[in-house]
Image (cartoon, rainbow, N blue to C red; front, side):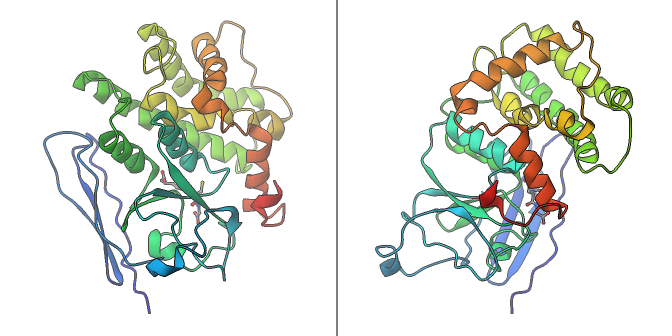
Length: 304
Ligand SMILES: N[C@@H](CCC(=O)N[C@@H](CS)C(=O)NCC(=O)O)C(=O)O
């Protein structure tokens, strides 16, 4: 029987950490080793889950875009060296990773997971049974930001962080702002709190204003300059889903035309960027995935 140690997700606020995921036989451990630079290499170790005999590759080698559930087999890899993303088509955290993979023009395969009716083998890849998880050879990385940073380190072209360490640190600090917006957004979408559009606006405004003012001060098209960078891609999934607010509340947040001008313009520009546009779903489909999560729709992500 598989024994999973509960992971302790530790993050040093300054990001001077190294997260190590040992998938050692039947045991998962995560340890933290401080290092004097931020976003050290995410070290991953071998695992033996979801492995297949070489001769099975020739028979089945395709990825699964259908969301696989309990009782399914984990599809064999088409190519051992190919990156494989365990995904759910409408997950905002997976979305970040897909954007980074696309920005770097990396070849990867996707295995979609039904998160309501999870396949047993998902827990061998991700101890909490979540997505995203990125498989590289016989190694797995979890957590969207760790995966994005791993990809940026391993595939530096194009670099997605500013080369100036101070500027990089500033970008990383803004991930917290995005995390807070995500929390508020989920409360709204899951209807955890009943508030008027004006009340929701008051909740969102401080963090949206921080992002707006930061981009205004940079004076560039994107946070990353004249092409999107890591901050743009880490933020975008929530910008794409922002229209969900209208679906849930029945009206937009009461913004004046001069409020959040810069970030609203950024949103329009990002939506047209080829990296973003190629996998754009918009808010309606995301909302359906939320309805699946809360049991308002049957657990069929392929029907969205
Ligand atoms: N902090 C994680 C969050 C991942 C996450 O919550 N993914 C959701 C899908 S959007 C999931 O797998 N949920 C399944 C569950 O919670 O059981 C990350 O950044 O990767």
